[in-house]
Image (tube, rainbow, N blue to C red):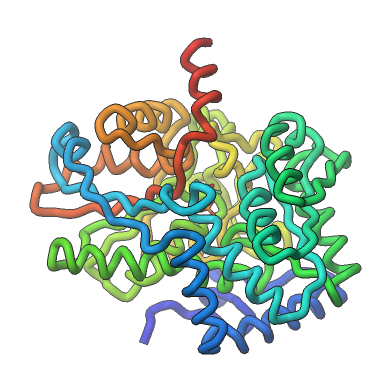
Length: 396
Ligand SMILES: *Cc1c(COP(=O)(O)O)cnc(C)c1O
């Protein structure tokens, strides 16, 4: 029996300390109920899982290796640091695990079009990719400000055949893009599938995204048992919406000896308010149709890594924090940048700025542990996309 208590409406925990659920208008609830039914039906379906397995292997390139970072370990001392190499997946990050899973579900549900929202463009690209793969028309909502900041990703999505809609309401960023995608979904759900990119949103998305991302933790658990003959002492991942972290954590959740640490972006410092660390410095609230920890001043939401720049967090993480199953810490933009540079030099692996947050905390924690101990860090993505930004930061 798992220690995790979640209701069939996607509510984690009980009473005051409960998170998730669904706080949406009735017409949207109808669409979500249909989605929840379809997910329940197919998640254990043999044909569905055979097809999923096929694409994970032949298209994404799974399994991803679990790599012992020997030079990094030597440099910082203490616990052995292993990297789960999600950066080696097709399209360069873990997001494709989820988009492949959801597109297969969309096909089963007879969807004629797929919509998604994107901030920096990474989820938009992962969605446009699987829509190209299956020849399904695709519309991506993106704040107008973001379309200007991420012009190359807009072009990439268009190259993949997607239509990108620039949303010119409000602050013209991710929040408005989500709102606009939800309006589209509520209107067109009979033939439209909303492909959500992280373990956030109303039920069933957090459970569905966890399901598709758990391949990370299942593989890592098997690989460390094979390579070291035992479970790790710590598993660690960066937390934006929390999908790569929950994907790594969940298969270890009932292994009480394994400590789970989520690393949030402290941005310019938690004390400045310019961060995106709701679990470290926020409080429970409803946002985008579900309950989770949310940062105090959403207008100050900031991280050096666009993929971590979200004011809320997956409800399952709020729950793990409430029951003490996982610890959440934060590292600053500057610390993440240093880890980005160190891992590149020491291992020849250029990590995504998002993933660099987890690497940075591993480098702090390892020296406090013995060299018999093991940390598994999820390297959620590769840093090619961040090279130009890092160049600018270093030359400023
Ligand atoms: C999107 C993204 C993240 C953050 O999303 P989560 O849902 O928290 O995993 C982290 N790393 C990379 C490389 C990303 O693209």
